[in-house]
Image (cartoon, rainbow, N blue to C red):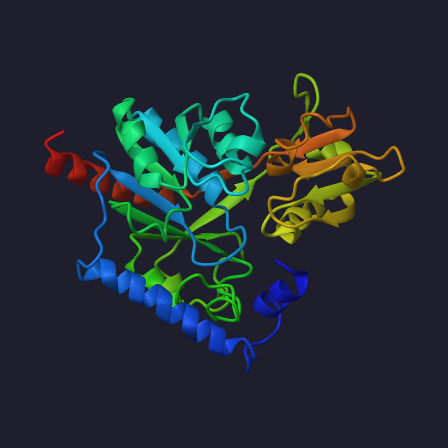
Length: 345
């Protein structure tokens, strides 16, 4: 998306927009499609196992992937074989593909590759996510986690988790293209779980009604350190990069969050923001000096062939308070167990 559009969506105050008529048309089409499923004119399909959807209502990164990784690990600790399904945004080829630790990101997408590498779970990418999820169940998956499947209504789901960026919120509150919303904000009320990623606890979340925000669980993304992109993945604490300038590269939905987190750790940055899912080239990383380069994990999976000892990436882990961890897992467990009961499994 052009930077001026993100600025309009997330930084400028609500007001009259020349794009509003297009938003009305888009919103009407989304509402009509949802109504068709609600009234039975179009039908959602079961995949033969409980489906948990982790999604968002806005364009741009909210923290879905770290939350999906966290949830997959929690479910596996409880003895459930987890299957991960994703569209694989930006991949070169269509059809259904299995993701392995050595898959090419061009063939499977950057986020599915991270999901598989971090969790070890069976992972399939496909535009037809119903077919992918069904295939995972046939391979032994007992529960399906769908990354970014909130608007994929053809796949029946047992639990919906909506992730909201605590800093950006719902932006100006408008539907695409006048605002960042994929659906009207009221859609969040029907989700089983709301998760606010970051922001200042106790302060309003932009565009999110206080009574809705009060229902949300709070998630934090924590970076333990940096890992070298090249070789064996040598690790260094972020504090080791203090005292000298370095380059920070982010081709994600919200690059400023990455930069702000690094600055909060006392690092002196030269910022380089790229569009979400940007395919980094050698020229993108040639800054004409010998300074270290820190990038996101999402960027690192696209830099295997470009790896240099100066290149490091910063993986993040989703964290919750003990109380919110219990609430989230209790609800997800109840939903999956209810699905098992209905299926007689």
